[in-house]
Figure 1 (cartoon, protein in one colour):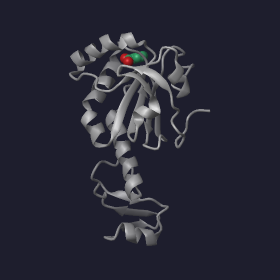
Figure 2 (cartoon, rainbow, N blue to C red):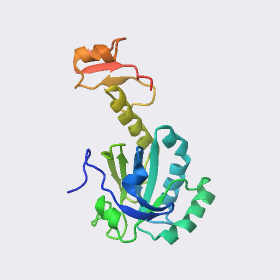
Figure 3 (cartoon, helix red, strand yellow):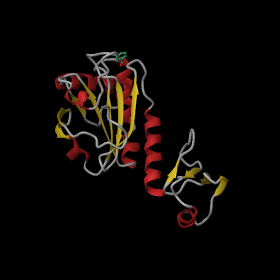
Figure 4 (cartoon, rainbow, N blue to C red):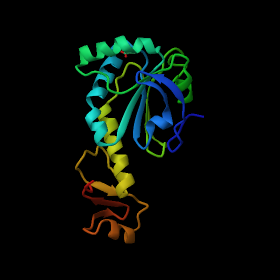
Length: 211
Ligand code: BEZ
């Protein structure tokens, strides 16, 4: 069965551009973004990896480690990394897993045989410090992902964990948030002593809590 939200992200051992890793050990207490890209030396992947490298300060702020995966061999990653730096202006600053035997790709359902049985689709897994999968996304090979959106989801997840709030449609940092339905009125008074706007009993809006 496909991996689902709330499942423990499967552990694995793999060679990466940062050496051999055991995934759970590498994760430590961090959040992680594990993402696959179809193939080295392809244009969309080149832009995605360059942009993800640029986002490192944003990932660091949120306690998130990024890790990419392709089914190319480790020795193919080095030359492509140089191209990424040259064309995207930022060198890779996170590990790339080399998975030529599709071990990790199969473990995470990144091969969709009716799309391609040779390359991974564009999968994304956001994994929390308890090793639970909190987001999974699948994009086709021809569409580059929006990594700002992935950061936005991480912000939302971290707010939910810390403050028991959810985020409404198209929410952006600093905008109002919603008290999660599981919080009773009594508990809401303790959590949000300044009060909230009750549009409906199930739709209670508060300013975004400060971190
Ligand atoms: C790309 O990364 O540019 C790409 C990879 C596979 C299929 C289409 C595009």
